[in-house]
Image (cartoon, one colour):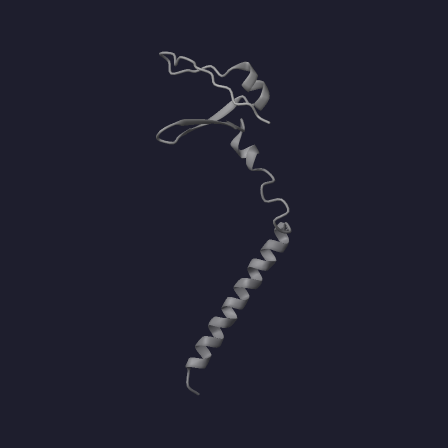
Length: 95
């Protein structure tokens, strides 16, 4: 069971607040995000590098394509679209 604790700290003239070592150690974070909810401020642990945080986020969501396969699929899609355009234009012409 998580026991909630309350700390009270002054904000320095530079706008800084210290986070107690117990909390820093528990969360293992050196960066936090700050959310303003209007009636409260929420600090959340954040990744030091937001780009690194996104790596692997889509892993397992689908099969990765090689660049050659992706280009082939794009070309195939364009060929189909072109075929549809030709068939649509030929069906509107009268013989």
